[in-house]
Image (cartoon, rainbow, N blue to C red):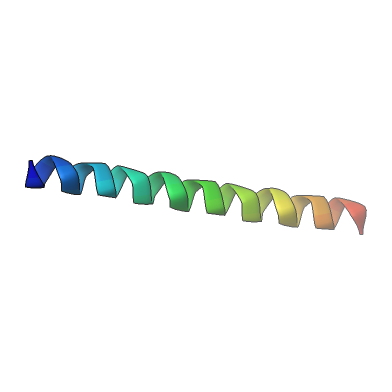
Length: 35
């Protein structure tokens, strides 16, 4: 149970980081396009 809990936590962190990086990339791309 403990190992599976760690795996779920790692997947959640990876998904969170991927979402944040995507948001930052899209935000910077939109800013560059507007300017």
